[in-house]
Amino acid sequence: MIRIESERIKKQVQYYSDLTRSNWSPIIQPSGTGDEYWNKLFQYFPEYQLFYETEEGEWLGFANTIPIKYDGLLNDLPEEGWDWLIEQGIVGYKKGITPNTLGGLQIGVNPKFRGKGWSKVILEKAKMSMQDHGYKQFILPIRPTLKDQHPEVPMEEYMTWKHNGKIYDPWIRTHLNAGAEIIKVCHSAMTVSGNLNEWEQWTGKHFNESGLYPIDGGLSLVEINLENNSGLYLEPNIWIYYQ
Image (cartoon, rainbow, N blue to C red; front, side):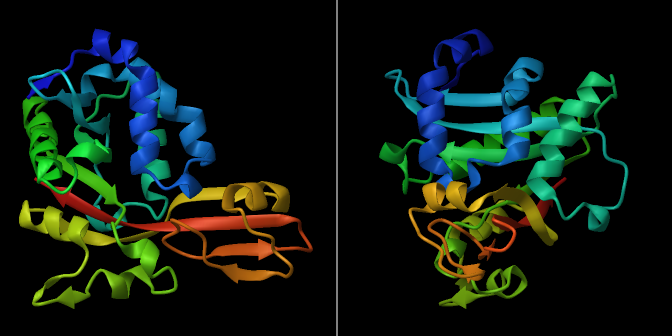
């Protein structure tokens, strides 16, 4: 397994986009913050986008990270989670602010290699990147793997669930086993808003009345308001950190 250098990343944009879509729920892909800043991530921080392949040259997975300046208390990390993290990094870069913290945006594995422990390997490589760059901590707003099966359950409750004496959610469990500490829930880590027509296109559903609805891939419920012709999805994540 080797790291693919930034020049080669540029030649693999389409494959990367496909792999990202396979790892992310379609419902969070219309995020306005993501649309505004995502491409700048590769322009400003190519060395922080970690790509891995097998020795045979087949894509294995990736970790997208971003350096930020953060001197506050961990408990004061914002509710906006993922949206805040990528904005903080991009805006900080434009202002010439020297970073001291590594932020984690996502870790993905090629579907062909899932279930074989590669997410743990890539996570360890991302943690090494924190050390290589001399940052004091690695913070991540994580998206629990199985939370979409229980969108009505508050994240505070869900993240404590156990099965056979182990943390129920595999992604939370993976991080805890790797030495992470949970900070808190960030209740609006990613915001997706749109009109009714957009929401019906995104979800394949027709909404006849206002209310809260489960949606495929959603970690929480979307709030539909027919009177205002709007829908709002606030995704909860969990702030964790490594030091």
